Length: 549
View 1 (cartoon, rainbow, N blue to C red):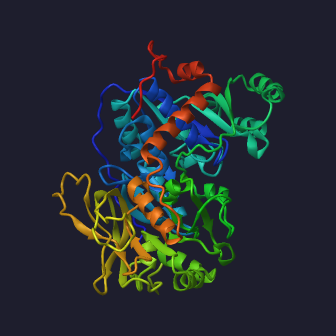
View 2 (cartoon, rainbow, N blue to C red):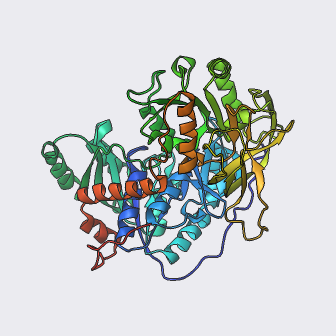
View 3 (tube, one colour):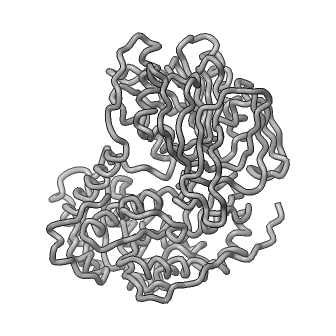
C-alpha cells in the first residue's frame, strides 16, 4: 500500500489552567503498568481529584469504542471507566493495530489513518507526532485535576529512544514525574530496576521519583533487605510492594492473558456448560467473553488446535484483525473440520460468530484493496450462512442499542419477547445477504456523530433457521445480562437442565472489581508519597471517599 504520509489531524488546544501529571513506566512489557494506572485512576477518583488516563501511543488488537464512535486502546477505555468518566480519543491519540509481523494499521484520534510498515512508521510518522500527542494531553489537562500517564514497554530501549513519543521523551515534554514498575514474579527485579536507571540519560534518571515492585509472592520480610539496598543504591524510595493479585476481573488488553484459561477438551469440574472460544493468532476484542467466564455454570476455554476442541456445548468464533488469515489458520489446524463435525453431529451444539467470526460463517470473503493484509485476497467462508463480505477502506466504529427481534430462532426466553440489547461495532467489512435470512437484532447508533443525522433502526446479524448457527457484528453481546443468561439457559434446556435466570450484573461486577483493585493497591502503596510526587494535596475529606459510578 502507498505509504506516502498524510497530514496528521489536529484540534485546537484549550489554554486553560492545566492539571497535574503523573507517569507510570515499566522495566519491560507486561509488568503491570496498565493495572496500576487503572488502580491509581480509581483511587484519585475516589478521593475527588477528577483524574483521566493517557497513553500517547498504544499497540493493541483489543480496542475500545468511545461514546462518539471512535477507537482507542482498550486499556485506556477501561481506565476511563475506573475514573468514572467517558473515554475520548485524547486519552490514546495513536493506536497501532498489527496486521502482520511487519505492518500495522495506524489509528489516529480514533480513525484509520494508514497502513504502515514498522520502518515507515518510525522514520516518517513519529517525527511529526509530537504536536498531535501534546495537544491531546493539553486538552485533558485543561479538563482534569490529574492525568495518570502510562508508558509502553521499557524506557531503556536504546534503539527506540531517539523517536520515542510514549516514554521518557513524553515525560520530558510534559515535565512529568515518573514511577518505575518492576515485575518480581519474572525474576531479577533489582537488576531490571537498576539496569533501567543505568541506561537512562541523567535528565531522564532524575525524573524517576519512586519504584513499585509488582506481583510479589511470599514473605515480605525476606524481601526487605533488597528494598533497603535498592533505596540506598539509587536514592529513590520504594513506594510499595504489590502482591500477585489474582481474580482481578479487570478487562485485559493483551491476549497473553488467555494463557491463563483452560485449553483442554474437558470442562472444569462442577461446570455444567462447556464453551470453547477459538484462539486464532490475530484474535481481537476477546474481552467480549469475560462475562461468560464469570458465570458459575460455565467452563470457558480458549482452544487453538483440534486436539483441544473436544465436545463443547457451544463454539465461538471471535473477532480478528485478519479474517482471511485467521480462517486459513483455522483450516491448517483442522479446526474447521472439527467445528463442522460438531454442528452436523451434535444436535444441541451451537456455533456463534462475532465480527470477524461472523464474516467467516458466510460463503465468500473478498479483500480487493488489501485492507487487512499486504495483498488483495479472496477466500471461501465456512458456508454456514448465505453471506458475502467485502473489506473496503474505512472502518465502522459505533456504539449501538436496540432489541432482539421477536420470533428469531436463537433461544431467548419462553415467551420469546423482545429484549433490550446494546454494544458496539468495530469492523472494516461490509456484509450482504446472498438470500433472505432472519436477522437477530434491530439496532441503531446510541450516540450519533454530531455531523450525522440519527440513523434509523436497522436489522443486524443472521441466524440459521434452526438457531444453531448465528453471527453478529455486535461486540459486548454477552455483557447484556438478560440476553446472556437467556442464551445460556437455552443451552441448559437443550441438555435437560433447569434454567438459572440472571445470576449477576456485569456493570455492577465491573464497578466492584475497580473498587477491590483500588483497595488492594491503596493498602500496599505509600499514597502520601505518591500524592507528593504528583504535586497534588490529599483532600481533607479523603476519608469519606466519593462513590465512583
